[in-house]
Image (cartoon, rainbow, N blue to C red; front, side, top):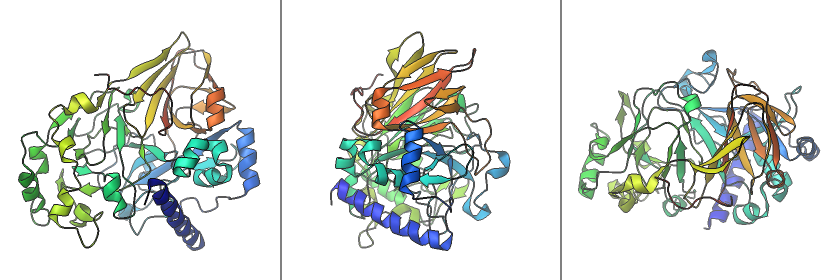
Length: 433
């Protein structure tokens, strides 16, 4: 199946799952409207911009780093058995792969209709209703919608050594591959957690048999897979591109992570900071008739994993796109064919009009002001289920025409992170290392 066909298939399956969950009440947002008139009126009032509802996501592994600006009372809002909230998703038209006990819409982005109302509708519903009016003709024709999302992941401890499937391997189980990118914002990292380093790939001298030997231990002993990997300390204000098929163990640093519309992985490390992970996490994304150690190993893009110049090829320093008296805009995710991101800083007291060549989502991480017709302010402390005015989705036309942004502070910058799909023009094609 083509990528577009897999997307259509996945959307149909999620629609069916959401419809069933609505009947059973198994949703985070139980009363979302699908009224086309409401969606179009909200789009019109927002002048082509939607204000999004915070989508906090629990995970069955690790511990919350508590840097998401979520109220301390609410980190177990989904219940103790589900684990703590460690992520916030942005501009998401897919749901998190969170197991059988999850609510069907975990991770999905919803649009707030008004500041004075709790009425909402799913961003994925808006894409269906508005189509190219929202995301543009190119994305609708190639991907039948919005093909990426972003998130903050926020763990107190380092994550396990794992990989995300390539498009070819994911297609074998009817899913999409998952390339992803990292950026480490200074505004959200007042501390580094337990480990300020990320492992990528394997030492260039490692032999494939060494990897397989360790994977065979998964059910009965510590794989110690990072013994044969290599780690890089985190430098705030920089990032990495992680191709699908590259194994990695992310640092315990709050990370902004633009990525493809997928949530598939294979976990190679079974014990991390004393937490033990079950054997099914190793091969759960392999076909049932081909899920042995060789099949798991073959999920690796071996050449990328043992690249002796890994940092040179995949480390990303910001690249200044525009710098004026009023603002600075930098590329922070670039040099890959799937996703892009920018960091926009509007200086104190300034009003600017920012034009971009494609639809995008964004999250405010510092300051306050106006974003188009909306108030815009970085969250300080949000209760679970509370509206915010820090996250937006901008239609292609509104992005091209330009968004008027005002920094209402006289002393503090207004800073936003902006995530784009594969059709964003002008993206740098080479690393700036």
